[in-house]
Length: 284
Image 1 (cartoon, rainbow, N blue to C red):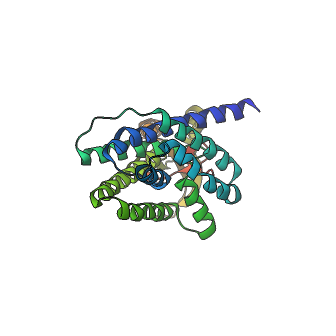
Image 2: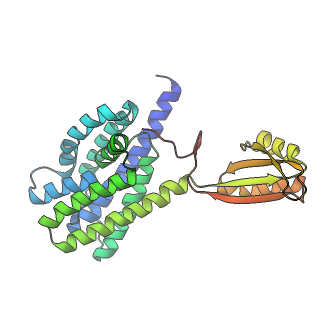
Image 3: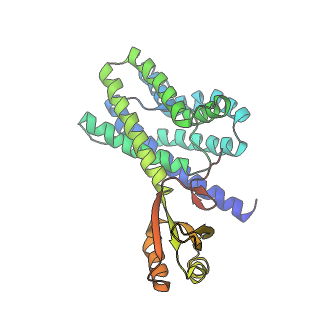
């Protein structure tokens, strides 16, 4: 095993541990004391735990994931399955270890806070090479086999869990759980896509060579040259295109305007950037 491979394993394990700890904390510290349910496979485990409290939640989650991983081994990439198996073990352990309740008496406030904590945890886990098993793997399988989007797959699985819960628990419990699921999804999108949000810059200048040289060699910004023509006179122009982190916008503008005060700069939001060492990385 190379040093790079070891480093990757440590990094992605750290993400899985942090994300699992947050998700487990939201379940045991907030949801369980109020008798609420959760999303996906955790929700299914809580249904069994509430109706037949024989095994702890972590053990139930582990057992219910066995058939899921059998399917995942066939349909999903081995690296994703390996890290998800590791993530599932970590999450199950966290469900067993983290048992400190958080004293929040207002039920609506509890669901929102639990959703915020869980959503942050899910977003952190999604940055890794794996998942914590359960619904995430089923969503990937549904996407690969039936071309169902990950979001739609998650909605289907959550709908099944909530439909079963509606036959076994008071409607208030189901509605509070629905608020928790919605809050989790919203925070997950905000955190996950926020980490991949960048600014795309278009730069037009007669001194484009000097600007490109400093952007690439001094500040290590990626720059692409695009050939274009002016719409009025038809003059050939070179347009510089760069996707940068939002915190680097001021530096880019300063570099460009120092070289050419008359340069044209257009900044656009790049909401979800995927690429080498930039933004979100597809891993399954």
